[in-house]
Length: 91
Ligand SMILES: [Ca+2]
Ligand SMILES: [Ca+2]
Image (tube, rainbow, N blue to C red; front, side):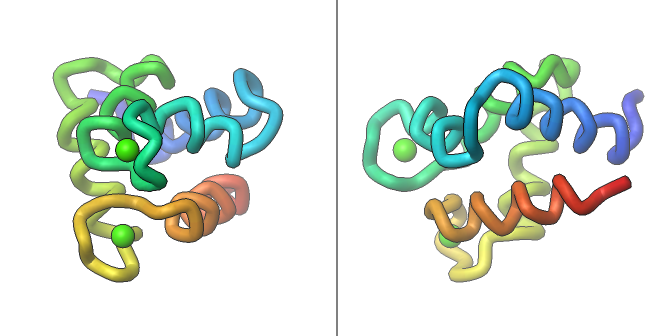
């Protein structure tokens, strides 16, 4: 199984290489345009990052668990932005 570090690296590559900005990535994966990334929408992002699909749901759940500041089980733009900022800080 891929390590956490490898998974985060894949997500970082997706956001930095396939999108011009984190905001563009957020808008792209917010499929219903409600201004939130739900676990399901985040799972699509994780899958798109080429993380093994069998663990994509778990990865999405863990990301929300760890970084959902207002505990509503989904990411708003501010939470997503700070998640990406943390990702970019890693190695
Ligand atoms: Ca949404
Ligand atoms: Ca939230």
